[in-house]
Length: 221
Image (cartoon, rainbow, N blue to C red; front, side, top):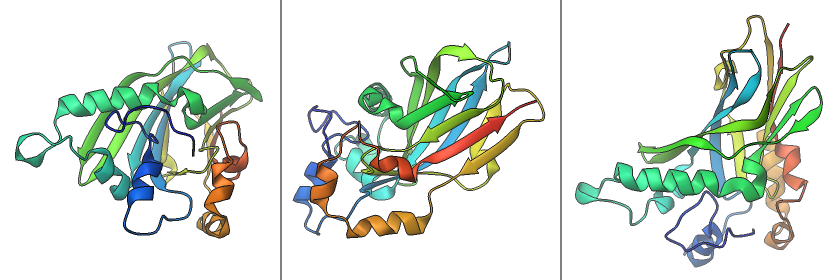
């Protein structure tokens, strides 16, 4: 798994997580190593154009505990200042992986501007990162908007949470049809037979993780 190349204490979503696994007393688990439960908001502007996405990602307890290690203030709590810094590092360091997000309007890929409004909370033993990812140029779909969330290397397993409200339209037109597709647990379990050597060959340009993509298709009248 490629590293973001920053110091261990300067944490990102993926940074140097392989070091923790290599040093763990238990054998390293097969891919994936990090699990994220995702919510998303599709943001419309006043002209009913899609202007961006709001991601809300909750990390599994194992990764969360490692990520906040050493960040506790008095009384063993992680302070808001540390979480704000951690949120900024996370959100701004994901450009190498395209923010694990693809967006298409009427079949055409759309780029993103740098993330804004990033935040992080640590509750009940889990970290939740939220950030807004603006489209580089707002656009109004003629047919459909498609959002995909996945890690090309499958180091991180993303799953959009259960229920249609896990993907919400904010400021959009009425009467839109929404279809959410999630990777199946059986597909994920099948990767356990693959070696770590195989995953070590993958990079941000790989397409292996695309088969585990979460997709939301929005079609509005």
